[in-house]
Length: 420
Image 1 (cartoon, rainbow, N blue to C red):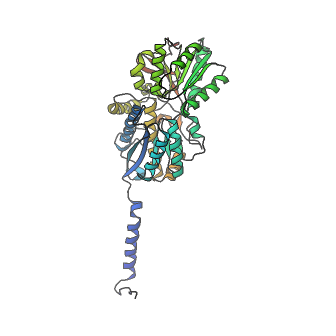
Image 2: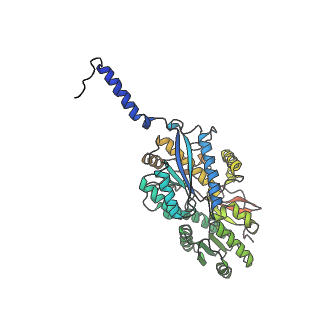
Image 3: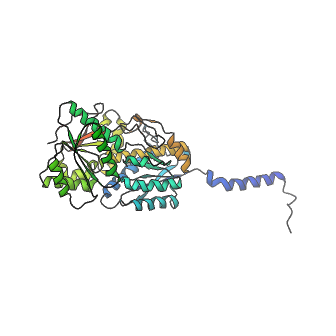
């Protein structure tokens, strides 16, 4: 038998009780967000482990800027956490993809389903980025490509893929703009030699370089594709030496880059000039190993520490990173650090940790270049998630350090040409 309502309970009491019940049912959803979990997938073991260690330092530096009280004029740089979420702090959850695309896919799924991250940032290797971003797309969780440069990544119709930095076609245009400038100055720059590994990074990079060389009237003296992490590059270097291009353009990760330079030295091949697609040729570990053989090497880049002369905040951020890592920001770590700041800014504006809301905020991003640590015009994403305003620079390794040599608006030194 159903019990009747106690006669002493009036309507106001019932309404109050209902309100309390309703409040208790929605409080978890409306409670102040204390932490925002962001996944970070990088190579933390294996041949590229140092890249992952440096990425961890870069992202932790960015998290310090977001959560601390630095009051930097940068995205999410005012400190104190994310105001849009009641001062919530960013917490990073790291995962190791071991340079394996399928491991990257599995780690992305684990971070989303078990750790409940709001977004994922990564991942150095473009081949791994391809599987991670396909996974995040399925779960409607944003993937922020910090340092992947393959142009095919943003051409797959994905809605949750975003990249603030340039891709290899954009970098390649800058490289050939520089070579055109050297030609105009009377330097002999007629032929190029391509040397590239066989994953998506090397393939996309060489395709861009091959097409641009042809379009601008450069002779392709040699075009060598090699197996990534090859135990020997003797035969390939012999081909390079025989062709002897005016400019060698390598697209290699760190281990392969070290082996390439050592093999060239052993075989007595000295390129007239090297203009590298960064990757391994932006890593301190490579220059620690073979830097004495690379004076005059030129590499494309997203970042110029020289810009700190005009933008003091860059120097301050660099010192924070250096205190953690023992080294200056470089092409990779600057992009990784900036990626988390831009992502956090979007989460702050979204006032939400839900993927679709963050995605919508990212799509509306419009950040002036001077409010970054990069030489970019601004950060604004196209429908494909790519920022086309990420102006590259060219750096030359001179006297044991990199200096900016191109474009003239950013340069602090004239290029040494040829390098030998």
